[in-house]
Image 1 (cartoon, one colour):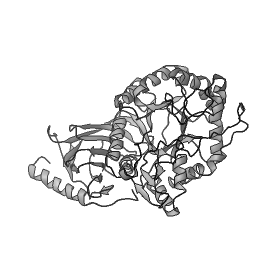
Image 2 (cartoon, one colour):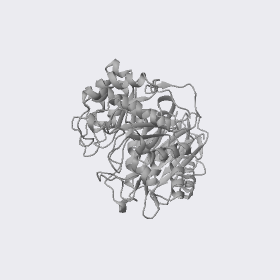
Image 3 (cartoon, helix red, strand yellow):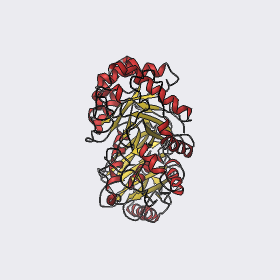
Image 4 (tube, one colour):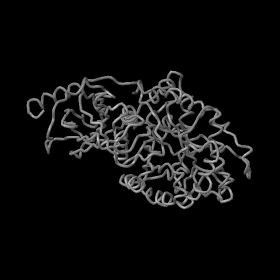
Length: 500
């Protein structure tokens, strides 16, 4: 591995293997105990030796989409060179365990899905939820009654003052959303975990008497709103859909022209401590994982600190959710994880916008995803969930016209579907880093190669590496004195699976 001749021989072989590979898929576990400490550094005595490595590559040029190499040549590799791009792996140092990757099963996604031809519906289900033929989504989100990506604003309890929720009904969801979720679950082998988020309580529970434009939950309805969560979970369970968790409130500091509701950190703390936590615990829904914040990274430490420093509130909390819409602030994810190592962090929503059908092919969309996912994972996120899994040719439907992109766009006029490169970038994580995988050390000496690595439960290692530059990058992987030489084409992402 140290000789110049061997180095360039390996480089040539690997380059040819990667650039000639063509094995695209259709547009191509075990559940962890949420109460264990998954954020702190741990150590494994299980030494993993690099014996073989397969690379899967997606690149801007050459139509590479999850394209498989014939196998990287590996050999002894003692001291890495300081100025040769190298990813240093240490599988003995282990960090957070992955819950899953996925997207949101919204009204908009479901409505678009059922407006497409049956063969395209089947293709979408396979592309997202089939692990072998697709990218194997394992953790998905949906909304409690309407959100902006619904064709109309609605709640499950429209009768004002109905504190007993005698008129509660999820009938609205039986047209699109519930059937869509059932089909997605079936395609995943019923192994996918779901969590739910409200955008607003019903209008009559709020200070502004409106589901839209902010407002706050009236104190006299705190218990009713907690009961509403239980009603929702129970009604869906009767439909054969069970939930893994929930977020308390989507974007609780955003006054939006669509469904929204304001909670200060203290209000969220007290709602969980006095109402939501005890109500879930005293019902048959006490196993649901409660996620706070569910908003941008910028203020996530303050929100977590106020709630998690209170032992009576903290005991109900699984973790802190975050979005990406205002700044990056990746370090805040790590700060929350370090300060509260018995709690998790999870990315709960992100999308790119504004929608323009003529720009579906722009490569930067996928790179936005890749960069965020790698940074979030390296800063201890236990899962990463995209926004809508599917939208129509307008970037909707959406009842307030704030249209955006989704990894798959379904043209309801022509019946065609378009895979954005964000689908492939997401798939390089969800397909190869499976639930139960644990992050290991992945240290890069090249600022142009952004990377992360996880050891799966079968002891295979998945290394995801990304190149956002205009030039091809040669690099090595080092693990316990063994190595592999590889290459990243310009504007590409690759997953190298070790000992698969």
